[in-house]
Length: 336
Image 1 (cartoon, rainbow, N blue to C red):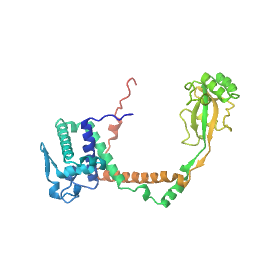
Image 2: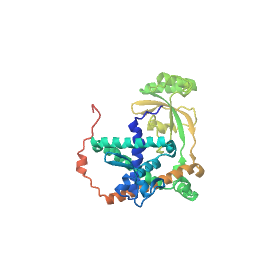
Image 3: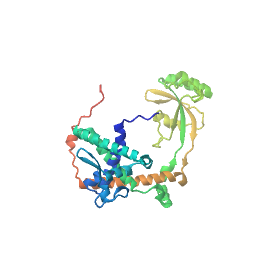
Image 4: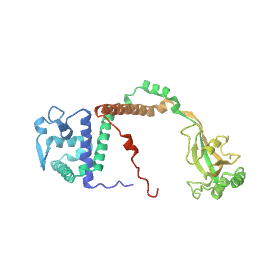
């Protein structure tokens, strides 16, 4: 599917505003002052592209009452992807980049003059971008999978052994009707039907009629609704298979066998056939290694995020008016 085309203002926003907001959030993490959030650091902090303080403070352009310094320009380049930076090797392209930065400033000033920066949607978008940038900074400061030792992986595996056990799965096919009498008649035929005849029964009687047979949906697989696990397996459910039917599937012993009774669930009646089995298995430590490393890193990220949230709640006390919250009326869909 082709990617939607961006307008020029959207491209400028993606190239300059978003990296700038990310840099701002990163600066907030390390406690930089307001000037450092908005501009390249000049006094005592790191300077972009090896510039000294005098070079970084040199004014390249003025836009209204705002200035764009050499430090701002260099910082914009540094925030780019390395492949994007390759486009600005010539003096002509570097001038084009400055013009684009100026356009960004013009758009921002015009939006602010029109009060768009005060719009709730704008404020919400800025808050969300800053949140994501702040969390991204936390993620960057964490470990990578290769930093996790084999002993850590093994310890996690032993502690979470049950998570790596996969119960048996069974593939089910169904004929669904709304009458017990009809279901019993269909069952009588299905019990002695060949795979092709089973498909014909599905096509003729089932309320959940599948598409017409095709190379990708052959007649002998008609009525197949997928896999289920045992009823005590929290991950073994299937929205197309009622719990009563799910339990009944595990009464069958052989693939291809049809259950010798009709299963009632709600106002429907089911003829049940076992189409296949996946035996229970346990993933080995080697098989689980990659997912374990990802899980360990995610736990560390979650912990750091929680610690940051707790720290911020101490610095910026939060109060909630529960009564006001209870009074909120949530709009419903038209006609409800």
